[in-house]
Image (cartoon, rainbow, N blue to C red; front, top):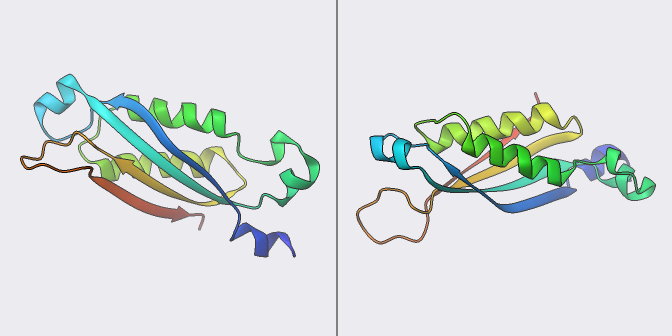
Length: 128
């Protein structure tokens, strides 16, 4: 099985990355902030790392989690769709071996006037 065939099936999943962000269209969201939760699925060829047992052959998920938390806590955006795009671009720019990424951004305390469990957006982005 070659690298091209495994890369489409191999994944690294990192869920529940949580940080306080100031994203939203309402003034109080930007002033007070709220928790945002991000889930990632990285599509990458894991065979080189599996065969070599070498961390440099894979995406370091500890560094990835720190980077995503910093993006959540960073520059405010109006929409969680924009936050998801920013995170996807950072993953693809920062981890050369990742061919595509699925990003889900949860906003569990969104200003919705009826009871709800969660609101989230999910995107899939790959390299051109």
